[in-house]
Image (cartoon, rainbow, N blue to C red; front, side):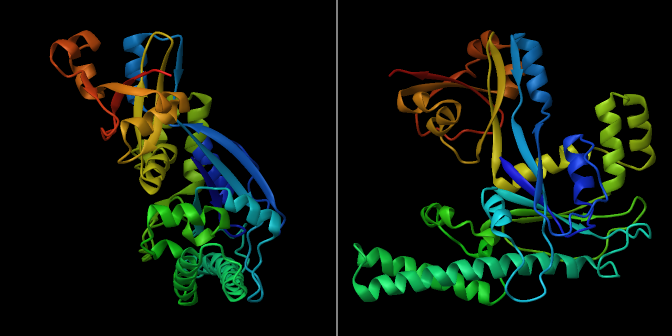
Length: 362
C-alpha cells in the first residue's frame, strides 16, 4: 500500500510524516511549490505476528508494510488553470490514496501563509486543485472519444459510447464540485480508469493537525472513500521519537500526561487499512512467520496470488485456521484435533486473522 502525505505549505505535513514513520525529516522548511518527495516504508505493528513468531520460532518474521510519501510542492494556484506540475502529477497519480494534512494549530513562529488559520478553507483549496486537474483530464478524454466516434475510428462503437457516457457523468460530477469518489462505480469501471491518474477518485484520510492542548474544531467532511480524524502532530512526533529511541518509560509518562492511548503510527495505519478496505492474513512455519494484506472479501485464490502468482495458478486448496483458534488451542496439533483446521477451495472468503497454508501444483 502506497499512500501520499499531502498538504498546503505550513500545514505540519512533514511533522505528521515523522510521527507516522518514526523519522526525523527536517520540519518547518516550506518547499515554496518545488516538487520533492521523501519516502519511508513502515512495518504494520501487529501483536498477532509477535505471538505467532513466539509460537513457531521461525528463522524470519515479516510484518505487512505501508509506504508513506511526504509530498512537497502542493500549493494553491492563483487561477483556474491549476497549480500541479507534470512531475508532481506523475507522482500523485501513482499513489493508491492520500493522507491529507490540514492545519488547525496556531503558532506565531510559523505564520499561516494566508495570514489566518482556517481548516475548512485550506481543505477546500486543495480539493479544488485536484478537481481542476481531473476536470481537465476528463474533458480531454471526452473530446477524443467524440472525435473517434465522428470519424468512425472506434473499433467497438458500443464500448466507445459506454465510455463516453461514463466520462460525461464524471464531467457532470466534477463540474458540480464533487470528487469522483462520490460516484458508485463498478470494479470493472474502476479498473478501466486506473491509467488516467484521476486524483479525486483516490480515497483519502483527512488529518486535522491540532496544537498540543487544542480542542477539536467543528468540521464536517462526509464523503465516500474519506475518513476524517484529528491529530496533535507536534506531540505525536515527539512521542514517536521517544518510541524510536526505545525510551519506553518517558514514552509511557508523556502518553499518560496527554491522554494518548495509542501512537498515531498505529492509529493512522488502522485508518489506512479501513480506507483501502484491507485486512491481514498470515502464513506460518519454521522458515518464516509473515503477515500479508489483502482486500476484504478476497477469495483464497486471491490470497494465494498475493503470496506468489504461481500459488494462484496451481491452486488446489487452502488449509485454514483462524488466529484465535490456533492460539487458543495451543498450535496446529490442537487446532487439527479440535476440527478447527479446515480445507477450503478457491471461492473461500478470507477473514481477517486467517492463517493459510496454500496447497498447489504446477
